[in-house]
Image 1 (cartoon, rainbow, N blue to C red):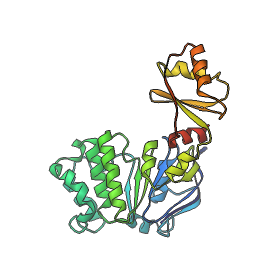
Image 2: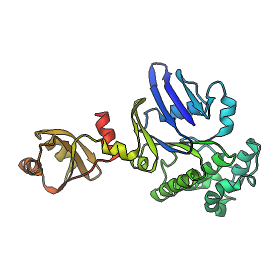
Image 3: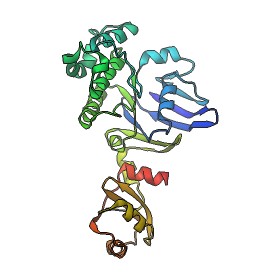
Image 4: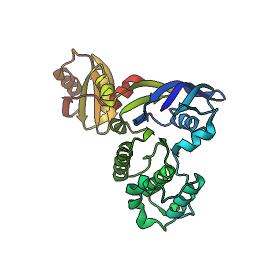
Length: 298
């Protein structure tokens, strides 16, 4: 359904995309996972025909994003990273406007947005600019769906919204997938990756790895420990001198420590105690996608 073949994008001397390739199958919920500045938005603008690639080719439903841009725009529902609807129009007015642009009506395709719109309906006369972050995203998703697209492209749809709204949004994406809709979503949140059928990890314009979330997590090559102490900064400094250490990164209130297989728990404890680190807990853990991403970056 979506095929990206060796896409590059240059802005003068800046190389935003460096030969990106991946394929999204029909009906998949596919994740493009990476931090800000990794090239996700440039790629989405190429896929929606808003930008031309410097080289390479991208197709959606066999339509070329450069040659067939008019057809592309009819089959794609797009939510950009920033809220881009009309702030001074109400919820209802925005929805009617976008339906009219695509020569359809809200009534004709209401079944596509019914579940989402029921949450918006109490605010249908409220201006879009006065909505909360979560409600703005629900309205933007409704407007992206109202013309019955074949492909849905969502660029960081949950950035800046509260955890409850973020959870609700992913539940909506799962429901839409059940209708057969093909969805490509980008996000900087690594835990979002676990909700996708397949993911591509991207950093600095390069694809680092493509696989299912479970396979990516299982590919982590080292022994991994969760170390909880009073001070992550001092712990990281002390672990720099640990024999057999491969890497160490802060993960919230803990440190994830990767070591060679030969390193036992007792030697980690002794090393930290010898460096005046007060230990609260040390335990072996399974790697997450974020651990794999950090390893690939390293």
